[in-house]
Amino acid sequence: MNIFEYALQMEKDGENFYRELTTKMSNKGLRNIFTMLANEEVKHYNIIQGMKQGRFSFAETKILDNAKNVFQDMKEKGEEFTSQGDEIELYRKAQDIEKRSQNFYEDNASKAQENEQKEIFKKLASEEARHYFLLDNIIEFVSRPRLWLENAEWYHLEEY
Image 1 (cartoon, one colour):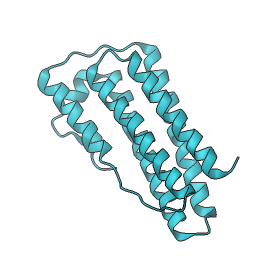
Image 2 (cartoon, helix red, strand yellow):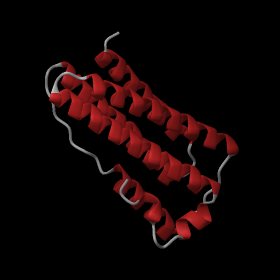
Image 3 (cartoon, one colour):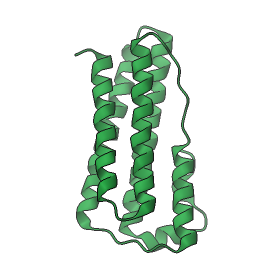
Image 4 (cartoon, helix red, strand yellow):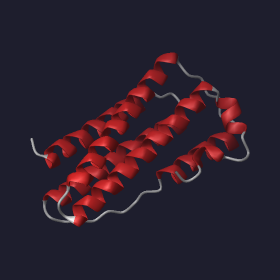
């Protein structure tokens, strides 16, 4: 399997994982965030598909800003949040997927012969790092939601 096919499958698997997570979330805000993450994986899939066909384009996303808005909305609505312990394990599994994706893209950026390919792999690695960071914040949030939402500084999701 070549790197493009591997990357396409990796992004499709990530999308499917996040879509499955949305079915397990009782909290609408978290469902929205996991839907955003699934949609991000679709964007990555399309970028890789384009690279495979010789097109090199990349538009960075605003997932951290969008997630920050979701958390702000939850705070304004005074939403209560309850978590089950096994959910955190799913979030850690998602982090592992993001970390492996980041490493894959970093590794292939260092091996790429074409500058356009190298740059897109670097940007994809950076996006995966943002996803990991967001998941880290979700884990912190589900571990102590009231304290996390009450923080007026919102330092949690400052630009990564």
